[in-house]
Amino acid sequence: MNFSSLFASGAEWVRPDGPHHEIVISSRIRLARNLRGHPFPGWAKKNNRLQILELIKPEVEALPEMENAYSSYLQELSPIEKQLLVERHLISREHAAKGAGSAVVVNKKASLSIMINEEDHLRMQVLRPGLQLRSAFKALDKVDTALEAKLDYAFHSQLGYLTACPTNVGTGMRASAMIHLPGLVLSEQINQVIQAINKIGLAVRGLYGEGTEAMGNLFQISNQITLGEPEEEIIAELNKVIEKIIENEENARQVLLQKKPETLMDNIGRGFGILSHAYAMTSKEALNLLSFLKLGVDLGFFPPERQKEIDELFIITQPAHLQSNASQQKLTPEERDILRAEIIREKLKAFPPPNTSKIVLKRPPTEEIK
Amino acid sequence: MVCDVCKTNQATVFLTQIIDGKMQKVNLCEACSKEKGVTDPLSFALIDLLPGLGAETEVEQGAPVQRCPACGFSQADFKKTGRLGCPVCYDTFAEGLGGLLKAMHRRTTHTGKIPARLKRSMEFGARVKQLKTDLDKAVSEENYEAAAQLRDQLRELEKAK
Image (tube, rainbow over all chains, first blue to last red; front, top):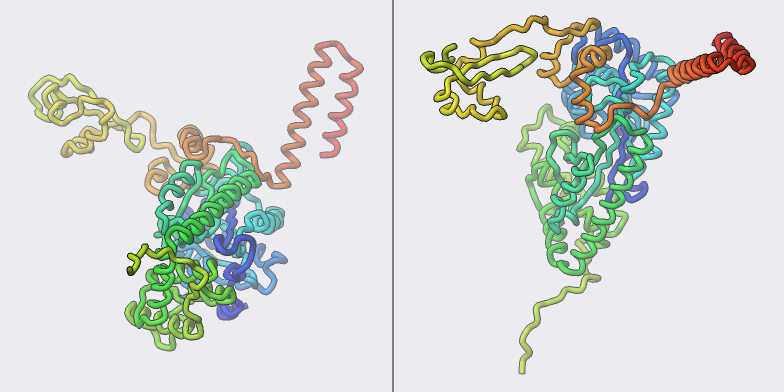
């Protein structure tokens, strides 16, 4: 499969379905594995990395899950193509910086991606829409079991799977969910929630993982501990916490609807107004405003079938996606902002204005005319 | 011994710090130590602020820098990158890593998935060990009937291997 068909088919995890899809955008499981008897990619010499790559890549491509897969060496990808893969969450930003000696293999549905020679020899991930950590783990565990029969993994009787960074040793597993929390942000409870999550040993990060800013009220929550707990327990624990956050977010939305309907309607209405009429828009502004449109769908201000278009806009307004749609060579940031606004205006033309007829506003009491 | 800073007064405060596996010593007089605010042994890092002192008084320890026999990685490399060199590094630097892993993960023993191949050999090893312990016990208790049975079981296992 070539690069463009990978993107034509669309990412499975972008589909607006899956359990709790109103709040949980996607679930992801990542496993880190290394080969015994070889230095980790960051310490290996180039010829060593190339040797490891040729040991692993054929086995990955031979997986039944990788039938008709997309497979590429990193040096064969243009900067735009790399960025597109990052925006689709198929490779990490760290992997995008790699050249010769690294590769990526993505299955046809773009739900399974395997990075070779990222920070570890193997970084495999399964992405699913909605809250589906358990089924994502099951799918990836199967891939891992198939690979371990072919590759000699570095495994320590006490420490488990050995990884380049000690923060991943043990299970080598990072489970995470991307959650949309506009209610908790608007009601100013988000910092409290993040602190509580951190306290129980889970991490909260921005849209593109470690060290990235939270935009569009999107947060990534993941386990930090990888040693001393079995995979299933880590996932069960994370699931429990996410379900609790979903409950908090739903409550926050209900409270806002009842106590501060104007705040909600103002944000959603402004979001709709600006998105429908702006002629230049940064990616950050777009994400933040689209978040309120998404909230508007969840709350019934827009027809539910509009969800799909909004989810699509979240993706296609990202810088590399815009560039790949542009006919000309390289867009400047200003040109990108103009193109982004144009695409959004076009999409929202057929969008009905927010329907707020169901909301009862408590107007301040006016003096009766005598 | 004179003070490393003023080079005149008698040094009465002796500080030792280990940085990147190298020992650094600084000797200060009462006045200079107060002036530099290093009276508190917990504020060791302040030593770094003393101009030029760190490098000049660097004392090489007798032991050479520890390197991983498999990949040549050193502890200084770990300090720089936060990543290890190869799987063997986990054994090479086990001592230093122990505390780090405990701080990161709270626990230090893997309880999750085990590759099938290893699982079989680990289970096999554990079974053999158990049988041998039981056999020794049976012999010491002069329970020869049980001992004979255990010996046969052990032979079976060895054959199956």
